[in-house]
Image 1 (cartoon, helix red, strand yellow):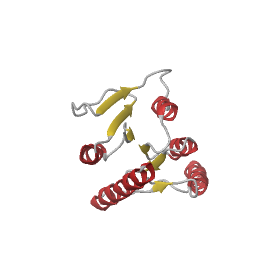
Image 2 (cartoon, helix red, strand yellow; image 1 turned 120 degrees about the vertical axis):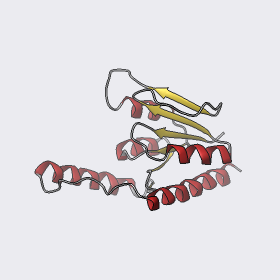
Image 3 (tube, one colour; image 1 turned 90 degrees about the vertical axis):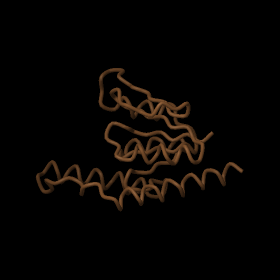
Image 4 (cartoon, one colour; image 1 turned 30 degrees about the vertical axis):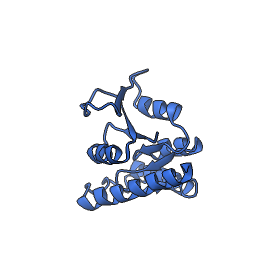
Length: 153
């Protein structure tokens, strides 16, 4: 069964993942650092991770249990990189797909942006989440699911 992991604490597309997963009969694992409300369905599991109280506990859990071709929904580039190393797939809530071909560039860009923020050159954050972002995410998630299904045939 296809499994979709959600790095859930700040994910704006949880409801969209639930709808898609129901349609394609996939399992959803919502991983968070604190309890949150999720639909009561057999195919949705909430995992609350509070090991050492660190902010990355949810990320560590996802990396530990992810398998090849699982789909990880996250904005965290480092988490995406670690999951790609295990053969999993990763997409952001805005629909950006991380792959072995582009993850190095994404990590370098992340590092550069962190340096610029630290230096005070950049003070703003990302643009507000828009309807277009949600639509792009759904399109990319659907494409990723179809690729996994074709590969498993």
